[in-house]
Length: 311
Image (cartoon, rainbow, N blue to C red; front, side, top):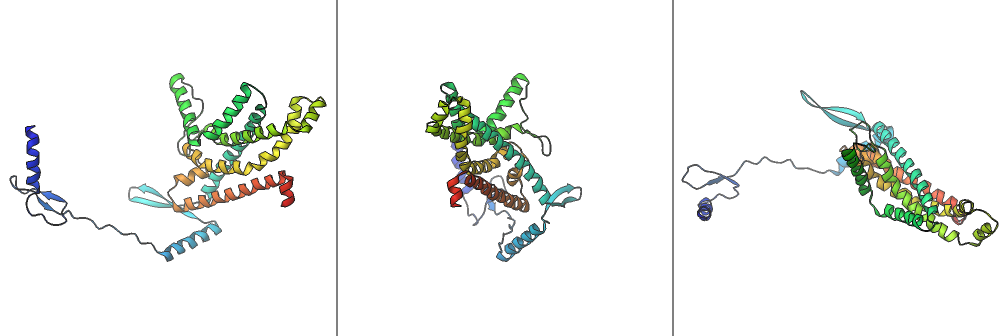
């Protein structure tokens, strides 16, 4: 308490006297004299200038390099004499990443839609099977992709720590082996859930039609009625929702590739600092989005006779 009583006196002793304007710090010249505040020398910061002409010239140069296929990026390598810039072509790197992303996207769509068809057919049964199908489809639509990736990573870490069993590879070093099961399961969960909802809703309507009753009256088995007559009419509804499935998968791929350490196109879009690499990757990703969406809408039109006649 005695020490705290000296605190206001010390503050007043420091603040008394005539202080110059704009000072930020002080230097005590004598032990019994108050602080004499002196300004610190501040280095002048460089100011950034934005020029429309320089920006336009840079854009024209980049487009010219992109058309000719000579987009070049520079990586910095530290040597004994200092940093050295090494030119690296951008398009070969983008091509390698594009192959990785295409492989992941195609496998996830095939796996997810096949599992969605199975869950949709399973919803026709009663009891626990129907509840399991509806629960999986609802969970797949509700859980975000990053939560699925983190849960799968936590699962294999737990089994490895507790039992010494590694279920699957989670992360790998740059350029090394990477786990493929985690991003595949996480990316296929959305298409699976959406396809299951479309198939379940379509079968619930189709199985009440008169031609289904006629097929059953002819003595056909329930499995044959569902596979031959029910799924044939549901296929058009699934293809009608294919653009939505494709759009959700492409948007989810960005998060999944970053979290799962996938050296793909979307992962490179978020992990690179180079403006040329990011611009080229973004253009290719937008081109992907347009082409795959056009393909999905084409399949939707071909599957629906009414839309085909209108087109």
